[in-house]
Image (cartoon, rainbow, N blue to C red; front, side, top):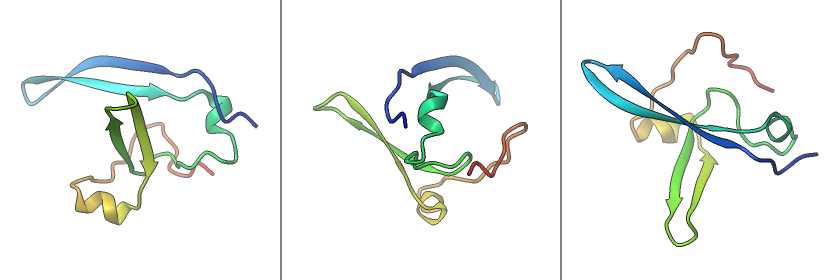
Length: 85
């Protein structure tokens, strides 16, 4: 059981439709993502909030229905399993 670990913020630039954008990922250590308490599935939507007072990033799982209501769309990604049990 590993409910904590040290992750990394990863960023790079990408171009789309003639514009350049910053893309940011949060690396979650394998020992955390494989914990039975890990609440996310690969490809599932999540809500991301900034807590300005605590200077924390809050990430919560949400339903696809909630995500779609906020403009999210499901994407199939090459090389990523959609069934992370």
